[in-house]
Image (cartoon, rainbow, N blue to C red; front, side, top):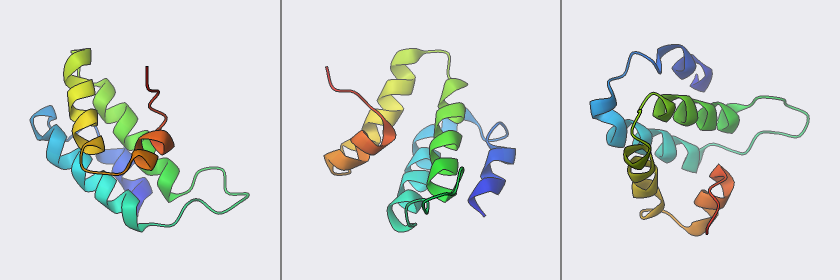
Length: 87
């Protein structure tokens, strides 16, 4: 099911970025990690959808604000899993 979101990520307005990304992170909180040996599993699909969806936003600070809003709601391991580096 998650892989179907990749097809529609360009159709979702950037005005809905926070609720859309929140929903994806919420889904990511409940699905299992990709099993060993699987190249692209559900959790990888979610990371890809969030990445390419947010790349549509030209304003880098707005992209970061949308993404960082998720890390305020979640433990640090979510940020580490998503690949965010702390400066």
